[in-house]
Image (cartoon, rainbow, N blue to C red; front, side, top):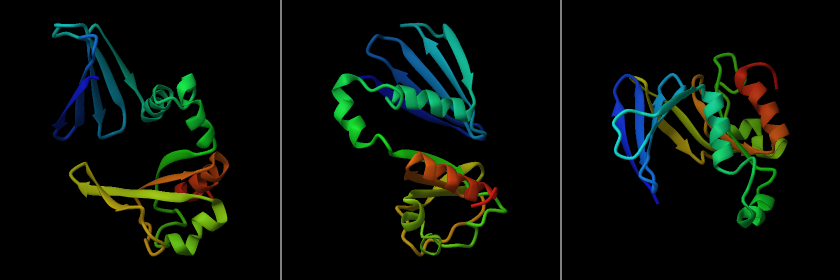
Length: 169
């Protein structure tokens, strides 16, 4: 199993270097603005042999593929069946969202939509993020600019995404 080193890049984001069993290294830079850069270093080389830049959405799609969301190896088939309808999304609460100033309980997210709020993340200033709440209860009140991590069925998440973005609900 490869080892992972991480380093803060003040004002930019975070850098990860994964030492692979093959001797290669994979460099990943996650910028505060959301895009990612990937670098592949052959064994013993200081310069990357290739690089690619991904938007936030592209990175999430690639991550889902690598994580097995699009294709599960046969060994994981039973696990896939158990969570086939479960999707997890990270959604930013818009200023004009009806969620702002409203609690999880008032919205009845689980009862009405079958959505579970896993965590809420907000800015800690200086481009840093902090977790406002993990598995927040019904009294948790949403605020503009927070990132809400939710789990549920894809159709319910699409409806919730419209509410979060202020496009309706």
